[in-house]
Image (cartoon, rainbow, N blue to C red):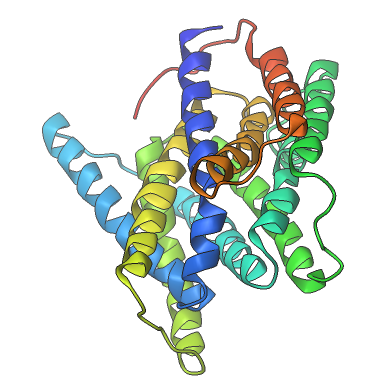
Length: 302
């Protein structure tokens, strides 16, 4: 494994691990804050942090990234399809279903990433990738199980499928943009565009919904979603995609259900059965099959 692949693997697995615990937090906070409003709050916090870091780094380097006019549309598209549409669908879908359903359905994201990467990025669809994807997907099903009441949560399930598709599109276009710009730049301004898109929807939502404050746990939940799950995880995911093929990097998305199940055992006293270890092993093997091989360096830059 090359140095770039190793760093990419660390970034992607860290991002997916952070998101593994996000569904429980968002499900709790959504009982008090409407979905689009929560996404807006999450992005405001993330943008302030990322923009501050970007400006500090630019001042230290004595230069800043100059984006071409035609590329602003690409950054705006990333902000719209990924950070606005996908995340909004994720929160709405989670509110209309449950954390278990959200984790299972959005685990289909890597399948869509591989498909879109083939047609948009012209990445090769190798037997190794397909086999790894099938193996890891089967592992996810074993870990989470099929006992999710998707029939009960029909519309929530449909919306969550949209989440998987749009996040896959985001990942592919981030890979495309990363050929010219840093991960920090793409993440920061992608979120800024998302704020612009979501603000009217948030104001409309607040006309018929209220924000309830019950305890400091709500504030902590919003801060977690903004700082850790957004500013941190988005940057890590985009950085990882910069260093690896989108189709290969997509497999790290499968770390979400493993971490989610583990945190349920650690924090919520939920039981871990043999399925967790069998499914987890299959996911790990699937990831290793496509990552433990020599890859051409893409270079490293923040």
